[in-house]
Amino acid sequence: MADLKPERPVTFVCDGLRLTGMLGEPVVERAVPARSETPRSSAGAVVLIHGWAGYRIGPHRMLLRAARRLNEIGFHTLRFDLRGRGDSEGDGPAVGLDEMIADSVAAVDFIKSESGAHRLVLAGICSGANVAIGAATLRHDVKELTLWSVLPFQPEARAGQRARRARHYLRQYLAKACQWQSWKRLLRGESSLRGAARTMAGDAAPLRDGRNLKDSDRNLMQAFAAWRGRALFVTGSLDPEGMAGREIFEPFCRERQMPARFHLVQGATHSYYDPAHEREVIDATLRWLQDKES
Amino acid sequence: MIPRDEPFFFISGGRRLFGAWQGSDGPARFALLFCHPFGEEKKSSHRAFVETARALAAESVASLRFDMTGCGDSEGDFDRAGLPFWRADIAAAWAELSRRAGAASRALLGLRLGATLAADSLDRLEGVGALVLWQPVVDGKEEFDAELRRLLIQEMMTHGRSGTERRDLMAAFERGEHELELDGYPITPALYREIGGLRLAEKRARFPQRTGLLQFARRAPRIEAFAKGEPSIDARMIDVPLIWARTDFIPGATEGRRLAQEGVLPWLT
Image (cartoon, rainbow over all chains, first blue to last red; front, top):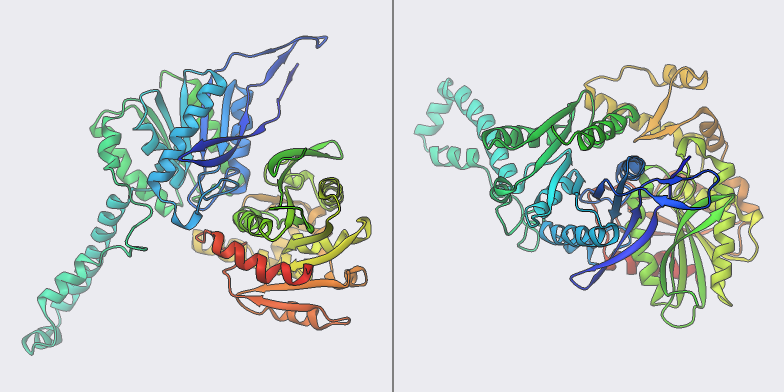
């Protein structure tokens, strides 16, 4: 008989801030009659990271259900609140990507000491997946990443936006070039080629207090290229942001021969609201974790 | 001794519910129970509750936040829970608050459907000194239908079409032939009927003398009309984004202080 041992609230400290989480343990195997309980040896430890504005339960409690499924197959889990989110300390509006990465590194230290596990996995959804990549690149002991709806990092996102914007305006200017009125306006000085070039290049992303909070001080794609491990990318086919991420990461991993699997959930949106889509994401993740040879 | 700031679990009807106790700086004059909204609104508003609780702690107000069955970190599945569970949960949380509150006078606060459920629970709770309703759901059926409209619009924007007319969808749903989920939370016909039957005005006779109502960002005609009913309720506005609906808004200590000062303390003191 196997019982799911309840999660317990835990706190740990990063940069002097107390972070709150839920620690889940592997299913306990009970002897019958139940006198002694033997904890199953840990299959590994998974830290689950929520998205930018969420907290430890994830969208529609998806991280909670994922943690329970992981506990059932023998993993320790830690769902925790990044600083300034959920029940953790910190000034929410001021927290940036690098601070979130530091929190996740501390979370790995914490679960490692609590579980004694050697196999360490970082799992994230949306921006949490980007945080997971950033944290994995700072640790030699994290060899596996499961990334749900990962986004392009900011420099790549801006480059992508610039390219899309440039394509859009290029089409407009080409259409205008076929019109005599446009040439007349150009000759009269009412429009300029320099202005057109500026429009196509686009403005820089708006900054908040001089800082884009989703930017990192490091070049995270470069760091990811140097990381040695395997990754599972899961994306919903109806998630434009996630698909933009996939368009960047799929060739990136292929070119570097990084062991990565890309799973597409047909018809799913960014947060996998449909219960069938959520199940598919969790099932695919569990299969991938159980299949170390992939 | 109860720690000043403690995440913990307590029991309601055999189910483990998550609670977060926020003790006050110095002896508590008041103790407040927060009742959360439902579905993704609960996730979105979580931090605003935390910031408000922390700001209240500096004003000698202790508080308990908790997750109802099938919500947040608590046990249970949302689609197997429902109003009877949640009413019992509020009563269990109130008992937990009372145990921890000592001599402090006790008050109840809810947001959206959590406000309606808080009001709905008044006849089961002893010693409610004040009731604070944040953007309450005045009519359960209207609210549900509005959510459904939003769902269909969302579906149209995602798929470029909506496969079903709302009327047909509802008919199939009520016959048990079609499943509904709101942002990942399955809605059963039983839950639809339970929530659809909630009318805030019917609970008015039980409201304590100190009852306040807070609206966010813009006036909602139905809430305005409700507040002006007999006896009238002290209703105020706060210029803070819709904390339950915004997925891009991260409330900080500033918003917490404002919510505490303008959205709670006027009705406690």
